[in-house]
Image (tube, rainbow, N blue to C red; front, side, top):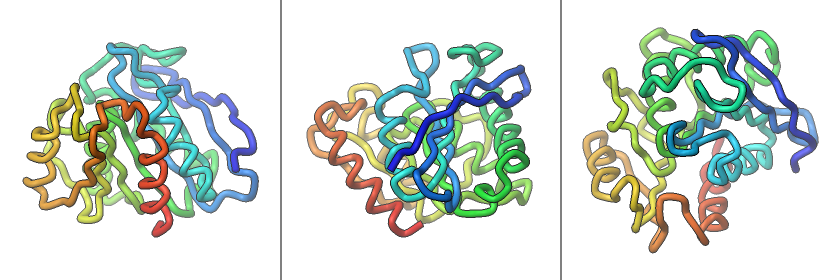
Length: 214
């Protein structure tokens, strides 16, 4: 259960990263970094897919960290098509580890929705290249990884992909191309659009099933 939500700020390459922490009732066994959709189209940490993912993570004993990307809320900087956002998240991961060493030493879930999937996948790739600590699970909802790709992508074989059959923003065929190229399975939610209207309970159940193995 969610105990409380606290505001916190970290320092990215462009300046302050405006964040909130969702804290579990009991001692955390790890943490989750949950990344929001496109900043220029209303994307922010309060997005309902982002909060659904965060709550599922908290339910599994993880601290959920929800940052605002550049130019959103009190976060400094301007939209940088995932390049600067990924650099900021690298800084955030390091600083979170310094501030919350016990949680950072536990399980780690990296998740994103829409534009946030591209930052998440490229953050994972950067960490793998730098031999940093890798997340125990990568969760991508409404995947738009290739739309904002600026580097080679490395994702784990057990990457969790979930997509709406009727996605009007990122067509299912586009997401299938990403999955096919990397030989990843993908869960398709029938009749669901990009924002999973009327399907959040289904999404939550799918997330909880994946998190049960973390």
